[in-house]
Length: 627
Image 1: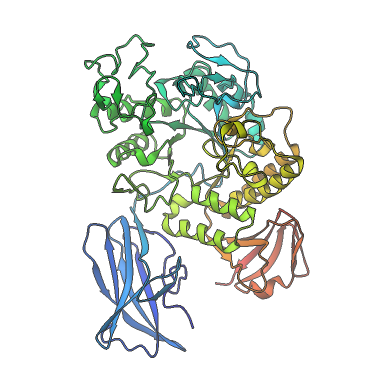
Image 2 (image 1 turned 180 degrees about the horizontal axis):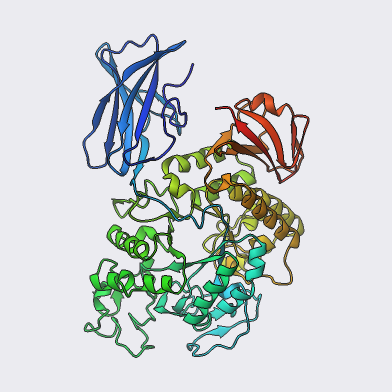
């Protein structure tokens, strides 16, 4: 018997996933013929803070073993809606609610989610179908170009040494060791990045700061002197554009550095900072508890004083006509990745979007959000990141965990559920520009996670010089290939964390931020990633095609693989990814992919209706969709 309701099935919900404002959706439930409702069933919808809306459902068809009831809803309000179904029989009220990720059961369960986004919401095209590359600027490439006006207190290191990590006698890690990576070094490697298929570079912070990660901004209007100059940033953007590469900056707007123009705790700058005087023009940017030494700080770290983002002067400084955002966009930045977006208030995010989009609607805004961003709550507020007034995209941590876990051996069904949940909850314009990754500067590198011993519960002394053995490296590399194939072919945009493609290792911060191993790269892995990029570029469906999984619960599919389509107007591409050490051969392909016709080999070994997927590799076939 068919399920009562299935939100992933178009015969139950006429539009998959989120819907655009003013679109009409048709909901259908199927009740067994022995169910005789006292009155027509109802669809019950509501938004947080608003009353429930009851919509009568009418009999549509009588099927073999059930009666189908339907109702239509015009999505007038952009918001996250919740819904369920209800009917009475013999005076007893029954409820139809979510009992799995997408199917319903009777009289127990959770609410289904319906995301409705603004009718005007679109996301920039330049990122769609492309490949991102994340660079931690101090550790990617050192040009050797002389620098001027280097602030005091910096320790220069030899390229490739282990980053400092031990605290001083007061328990503080100063992060004051630098390896000399710079903007000119990045510019010198544009040809390499182009050969890798990169179309967009995401730079970790480049503004003047006095720790190597540069998340403690000292001057929002100035490139850090060790990286170069503002003019060199503009030149980098200009030169990158010649290779079809755009540059996204990291915006850190929830806090500044204590050692900054604005707070000036250590008196480094000539202008009076908030720490020095309550008469400072910056005093109201911060929240002091006992002036001047006790103040609100990011996660209690006193080198990172929090700002009041909705302070009018601060908002104008960041978002105004002559503000930080427009200045860097004017120098060539393609947009911003927002650090700790869940700590930025809604009003500030609204103002930020207006500032960026009024400059150029094709500039992008990506938020750092670790959870499902469609229903995220932070500080008691239900966030509205993806409804059309704030973000274009988010860092896709849910996909990351699903891809890594699949490569490591978890159930294929878990991958399907994770991917489909996000694509169901997020607006399609967002899905097309999701930032997908397997490693970042905040988590251990994927090759260590997949091939090595777990670092959970280990201290930094253990992580500092812990490298993979030869066997562990091979194992991690093979599994990394699986995860990267998923990253390149699933919805969204793959983002390579610098050095992942070269086999660079590293557990957690700061060891995941080691120097790029120029001259010691894993060239075979680089070739593999370059191949993924070439294939991605050659398949138009990967720009914005919807996804449909070939389920891994049928007799024809092996748990060693996952298979999914990326749909197009006329031709679909079906991807088969093998996470095992074995060749996997699927024979009689057409017999169980009966929703398709006219199969054609695109990449891999497909002959006589049999497909072979190589170990830790992938195969792709083209097919036409029957309907």
